[in-house]
Amino acid sequence: MKTKNEFLYFALRNGRLKVGFFILMIFILLAIFGPLFAKYGPLDYAGPGYHPPSKEFWLGTTTFGQDVFSQTVYGLRSTFLVGLVAGGLATLLGVLIGFVAGYHGGMIDELLNMLTNVVTVIPTLALLLIVAAYLPYRGILVQSIFIGLTSWPWAARAIRAQTFTLRTRDFVDLARITGMKPLRIIFGEIAPNMMSYLFMTFILQFGGAIL
Image 1 (cartoon, rainbow, N blue to C red):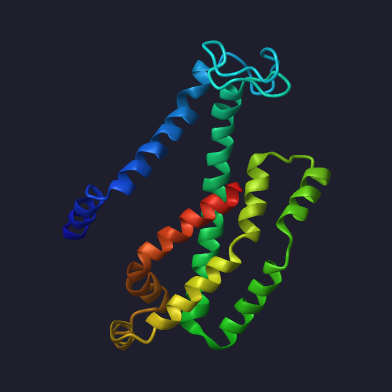
Image 2 (cartoon, rainbow, N blue to C red; image 1 turned 45 degrees about the vertical axis):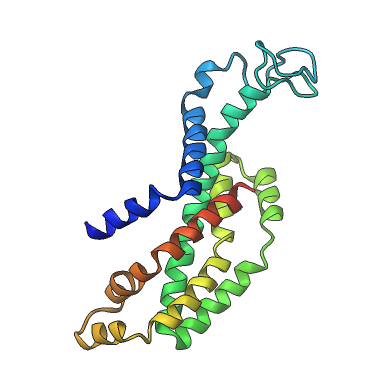
């Protein structure tokens, strides 16, 4: 409870955090309720091309006369879906592989490091083009999963390096002496000391997946 209160205390006094949270909430609300106010579909012909913002077209129109506001609010849903699915999957894989490799070291670390190197050289864009060309179902969800499966190596390496520095700390040695299992040590002792780093990893993965 004390940690939670401290987090709220500093969060409510961080101006940039409040502004960022406010902007994020606007986009979330637009993604949820925006289509209710959209008069056209994202690909419908709405009016003349290059029309400036007006009462009819709040954000103007594209070259082909499509309503930019409609494209924005419908596109936000796909954007958040990609960020959450691909970013969450990449973060999960990076966390698991990074923690296991960094804590155990030795042969396990070598094998996981080799797997990381293999995935690193896979060109994500080329893989997505192949998926779009040959898979019968090639929607946003499938593409998000493939993005997540190929985006975790840098997170795994970063978390592995952080785990290396924490596994030799006194509180980890004390946990080993008490007979605590490795997974419990990783997620009960090491992970809580890296929460800000893990959260930052998810934010970067979220943005990277969208891009």
